[in-house]
Amino acid sequence: MVNVVFEVTDYFAEGPLAEYAAGITVMNWLVVGFKALGAAVALLSVVNIPKLHLPALMTVLLWGAFATLGLYALGSVTQALGMISGFAGNAGQINLKGVGYVFMFLLAAIGYGFLAVSYSRRHYTRRGYAILGVVGAPVVLSLILIAVPMLLFTLGLIPAY
Image (tube, rainbow, N blue to C red; front, side, top):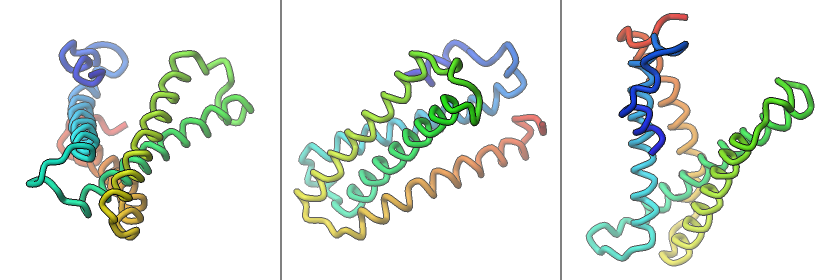
């Protein structure tokens, strides 16, 4: 919802990021798409719709969501520890809003972990699908988050600096 609100209100149209507004819009809608996919995967993992019963794909997607959210949360906690230790930034930059944000991602990762384990057990899927999701999803997402900004730069939607 936050990303949609950013776009509906033109949040980035003015201010220090105004020249990046077009690129941020593309990235915001990409994030909305990923979040919608994640919600659909979560819902489809708990309902019984025979036409949409694809255990291998669902296993890869559930474990991929778990791993991606888990890595993101782990990275955020590592960043906070770096700030607390004075290695990167300072502890004064950590606030309740930031802690809540990280906590939300930790809860989401735990939730997808439960869904992934439960789905894998209910459908007796191969461990290889889980491994593919855990390894593949963060790699694919990383490649997307590198390729899309490069494309936006090439198309002139974000500045060179």
